[in-house]
Length: 252
Ligand SMILES: [Zn+2]
Image (cartoon, rainbow, N blue to C red; front, side, top):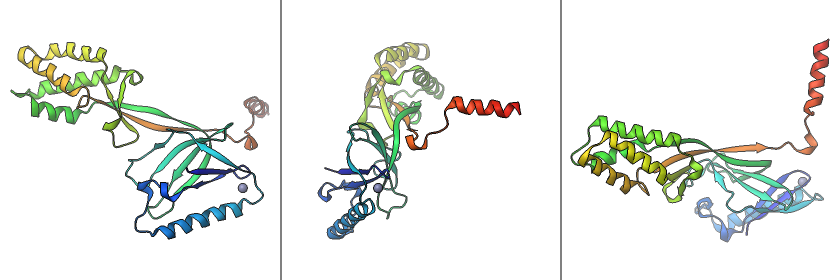
């Protein structure tokens, strides 16, 4: 188990990672094992020396709280996860600025949440698949009309109501969702205005082929929203007091 230690006096943290559980993507295979171990041990000793006489406590990492700003495979990135001492919650920022730098951990009092910033259709992929699969081919006008219709669905849909398809994404802040049944019905009904006869049947089949794991999945982009709370020691002036001060200033 990783051990996350916080110095209560300085609000600094140290992550003690047992080497046998070192996540693969963070492991540098060019470095001999022993070198790695001694660096780690030295760092821990440094931390203990630096915070001698201070109050240390263990923090528990909150499961499934990990979020990252870049792709999983990216070595230089900033990630966040949550930890608790049982009473307070903390955000830990994990980052490195250069590929050859060790990972750094920073404690931020506060919380974070994910905010959906965009819901998009996979226009290019839909277009490509339509051209590949539909025989006889659709006219460009009809492809555009279908894309516009899908776009309308993406605009009105509530992402919270949708089923998430986790395995589609290679980026932690991009999540794919299945269009729900109500909106599928809407899509099909409006397709009747664009496509007739055989063409409509082909489109109906296309929609059913691609709705669960294909090009009709909606792509939602998220942003990490960090809400820092001011430390009690550095309390800002209460609003009422600040207002009074303003009034006095205005009277002068
Ligand atoms: Zn300390």
